[in-house]
Image (tube, rainbow, N blue to C red; front, side, top):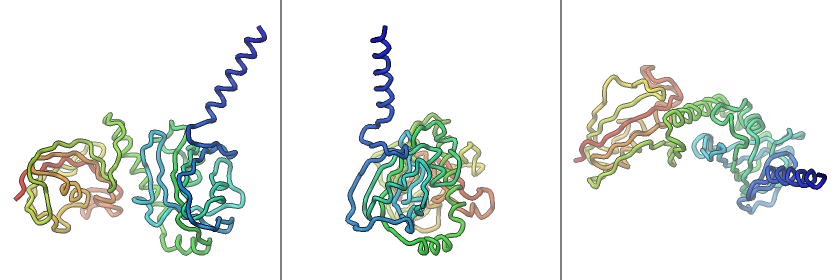
Length: 292
């Protein structure tokens, strides 16, 4: 009987150990995991009086990108170092980095959203046990430089929260439509459906006849009827940026269905007539009718 109990203890301990291990990552004392991706050529470590500026990509546990500095904060992710970092924070690792270092971290969602967005865990990753953030230390600046930069970007925190909510809306739409994981392209556009043909491709200077129909994420139509437009492709300000980008990838007869984030649609101001609110993602069906 004793040996059965002893064997049970060994199995339990082994299982617990396996739970504390993630392939390729090392568990830190603070409760997060880290993996070195690349070594930089800097020679200075940031001190507690400094601010780290990162290029960053943030992902859910299913590896879906919901925030990155390439699209959401082009000036970088600013992380002021604290004299008493909170438990679970990656700050003690940041103190060891030099400019150019790249690291992947796995962090508990409650800690992650507290540290980077000062908010509770949003619904789109409420069931995740870990959040992934890949960072590259691009610059180390003083807190005075950070303060000056912050003052010149008033309202950025509100913008970040609004963008996060927009990404949540898109994530919910994909799940409700049972589309699974749809990765946005380099522009941030989501392609949901696409047909192909072997006909002429849209190029700058050609006259394109296109049909498109827009709707909100909840299915409400943007316009009462499908819009048909003929214009010289490449002429500025004829359509919203997202539509222009996609049309330039299509051929005659091809159709596609896409999600256009607000920054490629009507942005932070919304439409001029007020029908489309600020920070509103839109769904578009597009067809190239003719190219001349």
